[in-house]
Image (tube, rainbow over all chains, first blue to last red; front, side, top):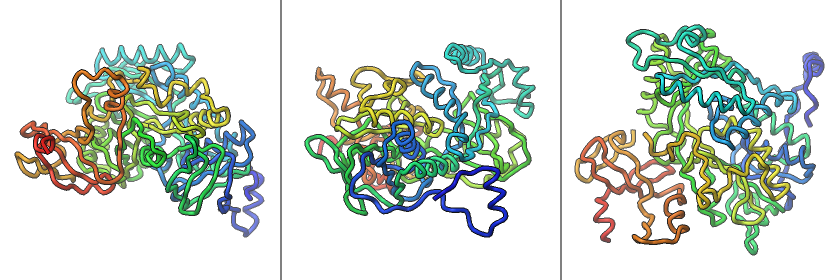
Length: 418
Length: 89
């Protein structure tokens, strides 16, 4: 299988005609595994990798309905950051940020982390005060944050609309320098390759059709390629969590919604940071290929279609031009949509389920990509110990029964707030 | 563009409406004190991939609520109904 990548292996390979070896194999499913992970996206692959690396579990399989990287890991805007407010989220996303910082070395695969800095804009004094509070909370947790006034923002982002005609005048901002972007496909491929090199079976084209349940205990799954038994089973299929959970007889606090993302035609280097608009949910960055990558709100009603509605394209384009008038004539190259598990408080679920030996990672509303390493780390811990890690205790599936919501924005459900 | 037929105003763009959730969940009886019942009503969703009966409100039109049959796997829209008539069936 794959050998270690290095400058030397690159040079050696340049001299040979042989193609690069496949980064992971295509094994047949075995009848029995110690741990079975459903979902070959970023979270599922990271879970399998950390189960093998951190917990020494040998007999692991990841099963994926389509192919590796076909789901939300390839349908996001590639942003990573750790500027949250509420205890629980703050520590979890900072841990994820720290894992991102070492991930390329860890996986021996360049995930192209670019810590270009993220600036959240404020458009009035009240919003600026809220950002100051957020920045203080971050700094008290050892996370970098810098409060910017209008002059600072003008120096860093000179191309925004500072004219008297600006629909939402820019008052200031909050900068996290360690935030940035990661090449999303490389995350899926890197985790898949690293997991496979530790002996994890990655089985593509294998769709779950049901669960094998005995006495309230999940002992395996039925698939289109036959029954696969497992000591422990983890679900990491965000977007389709409800669909899969229903096969196990569970109802989840989740509704599936659509989030669109957009990329423009490539232009010369222009947007050097990640910018978040403060007047609407809108975020923009520039890819290494030159395309402006941006996104906005969910479409506003539940659907599994992976096809966005046009009015949202217009809203997002209006945000882009309100913020950066000079890009008004740039053409949109393509846009795509991913299905999100929207939860009642906007926070995810990582942990045990009411069924024994069944674990879940899901409920990712907007923040799934940046959480990939930490979600994999925590789910692996939960599966290995049958108990949550300190960092994901707050993400329990039953938190609404206990009144322990984790509502970072303080506005309840995002789903109907449009 | 998703087009929805308001039973009172006729067919319009979906942007005139606001989605209002699953219309098949029975609301617990007034005075129900079991918190688990309320939890299940408020927080749990069937969230099916396929046929879904749901509420919409015509917020930028007549502001009436309606019940719509829609397939969440394809977005194809079926009949829309007056909620009172659905409830009385």
